[in-house]
Length: 213
Image (cartoon, rainbow, N blue to C red; front, side):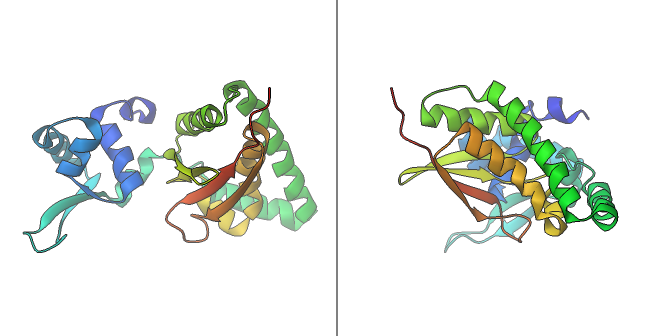
């Protein structure tokens, strides 16, 4: 199953939505995609057969239990892993042989190239349009990302990260997304939650500089 093509299908979109939500019923998902609950259930049956989702009974109130679906560990293979274990080992070896400054230089180079690529994709002048383009760029790179409006700016949500395990030992890896945000969005930003630190998502609060003529 080619991941890029898979995520363009209805089943792939359901998997992405479950990654974002954590769990959801067929009715919840139907509302997100403009489909009937029965149509969504048909897709969930296939995903459950393939071992990608699991069904559980959840009581949401005094009514009868609702059946919700969530992703199984097997579904993780659909999302970019970036060989994080190997990357962690390589970085540890670089640090042991050449020192922490060598690791910093490696990420400085990676960050510079990431910023150069981002500049080609985040080209809007309007702050919200910029955040939309950044979000789309992250999605193209396999990150389940979205943004929301907050007072004075935007919240950028990343529901998965191919480098979250590496970041536990080498927090320098997070420099890349911070540098990309600084360069493409501008203004001020801060990270409020991190998958590497045990959070449910990587969440950034962005407050772009005002648009000037």
